[in-house]
Length: 236
Ligand SMILES: C[S@@+](CC[C@H](N)C(=O)[O-])C[C@H]1O[C@@H](n2cnc3c(N)ncnc32)[C@H](O)[C@@H]1O
Image (tube, rainbow, N blue to C red; front, side):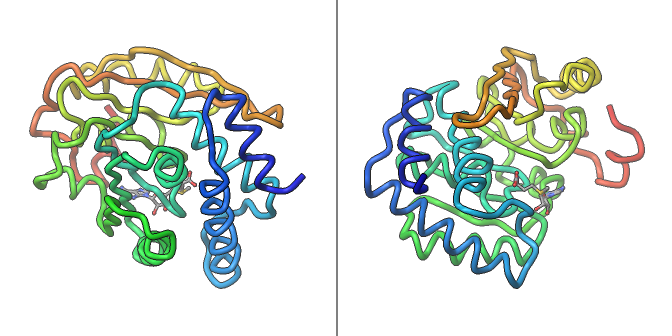
C-alpha cells in the first residue's frame, strides 16, 4: 500500500484527518530521512511501510490524547524528529521545540524543517539537563519524549521544562508497569503526578505501545535536574 494510504487511513483510525498536502509533506520527510540515513545513523527503521507505521503513526497517537492546538511543545531527545515532527505536520499550530544532544541529528532536523517550510519550530543542540537550567525551564505547555531513557530518569530530564499545570507524555512499551512503579518516587520529588496511562495499537500493525501522561502539579525543585553522571548513578 502506498505511504499516502497507510497514513491517511491510519490517521482516520485515530480519528484524525490528514490532507493530501499533509501526506505529501510526510512523504518528503520520509525521502529525506532515507537519503540521510544512508550516510548517518538516524534510525534502524526503513522502508515506506515501517517508517509510516512505526515512526509516523506511532508519533501521531499522541494527538489523540489531548488538545495540542496552539500549544508549546518540547520533544526531548528527538533524534530524527520523533514524536514531535509528525505531530507538527498533522497539527500545524503547535509551537515546537526539538531538542537533542547530538549535533548531527539537530543539523538533520534544521535542514528538514527548512525543506518542509515549517514555521514555529526551533531545533536545539543541547543536553536536556543543561537546557533545563536556562530560560526554557517552566516554559512549555507540554513535553513529549520517546526512546530516550527509563521513566524515572526521563521525568528528571523532561518535567523541569513543563509549566506547572502542563503535561509530560512519555512514550513507552505496553509492558512498562514495573518502570511506572519505579518512577513513583521521582514523580513525587519532581512535582509530577501520574494522570493516565493510554495503551494503543499502531494502526495496521499489532504493535502495542503506551503513552504515560504525567501532570506537572507543582514547580520542579531547583535541585533538579542534576548532572547527567549523577542522574545515571543515583536514579531518583
Ligand atoms: C534512541 S534515540 C530516540 C530518538 C527519537 N526520540 C525516536 O524515538 O526515534 C535517543 C535520542 O535521545 C538523545 N538524548 C539522549 N540523552 C539526551 C539528553 N540528556 N539530552 C538531550 N538528548 C538526549 C540522543 O542523542 C538520541 O538522539
